[in-house]
Image (cartoon, rainbow, N blue to C red):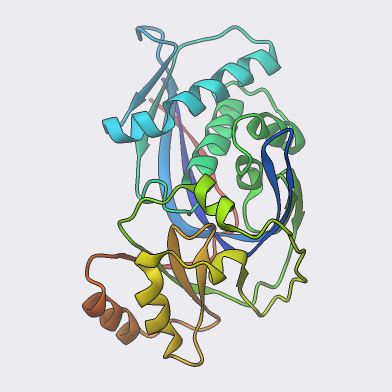
Length: 279
């Protein structure tokens, strides 16, 4: 049996600007600068002809509920696009990125599942084709086809690779809170203003609308005058960014002040490797 093993990286938003809204499509237009980091979910993909369903996910019920519908759509689009006969597929998911934490985990898994199917079936789809298929499932997924450091505009479909990210190290801070993305966008002023990107400055439209659960953390970090920090996306997590290694004493202090949060020390990651195993 051939299995495909693939790592699905998280990403951070170094820049997050809402530039407009399409009322007809109910979509926001964004300008983002994203960077994949070395925090990964892991997928194992293989054909399972004896399975009772066309797509099976082996993971916790929470993960299955979170991902099944999107992965089923990706599965159906892949076979429809390539025009090859459907076969039953099983995915084993090992989750390391907190679910719905603003780190892009869903888009990453969708994109890399499609990449894994492309490898498993030797369909030789181009990067452009992989991005197109993934865009039909999740607006963030096309970025994860290549990952790295990139500018994303419009509704996630226009991606420009960048170089020389000034930040190399991050401390990701994940609170145990539930935030509605839709409600967060509704809190923004309706006069959307494009903002100029400056590589050495973190920016997020939602930094002026910090969730109440994160206000004390934000105010605590503001006491460190030379620290670069920002919300992630609409504000489901927070992060500190630095060119140098982040002092471990800061993490210890934060864990003492905010013991209920999760903390991840991470670095930049540039691409994923698809590994074929023959068993």
